[in-house]
Length: 560
Image (cartoon, rainbow, N blue to C red; front, side):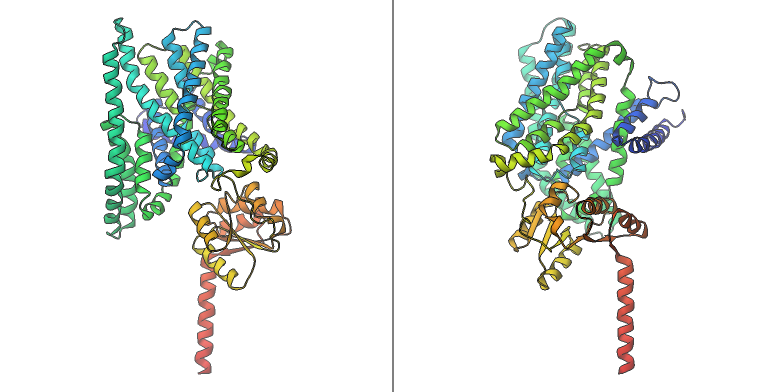
């Protein structure tokens, strides 16, 4: 193991993450609890094998880069600009509130001001991985809530870039005892802001043209393997290159690379194939966090850890809640953003590490922050479950207040209240489009459930009723009036996602006729287990159609 630390760290992290995640699943706990525990087991604070923490951190960084790249693919500059009015002031005010609370905690503990300030700043920034995983699990990234959350993250990311540039300059001045020169500080800030502006300008002006052009040239080669490699090379290459040239984070570089690559429809298809790689490295992020956890701090400073956790879970969340409500957004949006930000992660670790290196923060304060971070990450799925349980109250509130006027991209529109005996089609891809055409030809009442806003708008223009939102959610199924539907046709190709939709639909309407598509025998068996009446396999149906056509042609030949 010691001769191959990279392989040992990779294998031990993934294997133990699987073991403990499977155990967490049996205990009805979130999988990330298992990932964190795997990190604790291979960390330096528990006996036995100790994985290489530096390598684990770098592997986790790859996961974060790929995650932000994937988010960028599905975002556009228009999406970001649409939420700038709330994301920019909201993120800055919320960070200021958390920082002040951290300073007050430090004052109560007799910490130096610099330590309290860095500690509070580290508490103010949410984890990209935790937030995006929560949003993806609930299919919220394409909603207004998701766009606000991502815009909020980008503003926090830019603020952290500035903080990471300033901390070494301030720390060096304090260590020398000469004080901080206003001129030198202004120069440092100006250079940092100038680099960020130059980076954004280059990505928007040059990247928006160069990246799609490059992908088109590679696609012209006819090699899918080469095209897939080009997508990864651009994602990782841009992230690494801009981090060195402009001083921005890997994550921000990957996000903009994905956003520019989103101009190419081919890139979407190729990037989807990198999802297993992205998910595997994202798991290693949680393992690397678990490795940092020194459980002794819970015994030595339990009250301090709880106070820091309260700032993260209550202070930040309440600040975000009031900010979003003040912008006249619905309560559902405000609560979703508040819960999403009730945790801290990778940037907090980086920032507190720089503070320790500059002798501005003690090692004990770092341990407190790491413990509070891990507890906040564990609590975050619980908070989301509580938010899910609040759905009836939110529905009732939106029905009687101005929240009912939320933008159509945010709320799932209830369009099927007057429909009964209708057919619900989940997904408007190639298969879903063909089904809808046939159903309309026969005059059958029809409703489509689709995640992509562009497709939903196109359907409504065609006069087809459509519901936007994750099809497995109670909110979307209720909006589709599934209890009165005649049949549900699930065209989603992913077996696990389709299985969740089938399971939720079967619970809502036990007598419903459910038909789903499957790509394999195992997928078909899974869908049957979840409650599908009929499962159609593409290969089997194609073979049957060819044989039917052959039989018909043979009969015609005999008759002739």
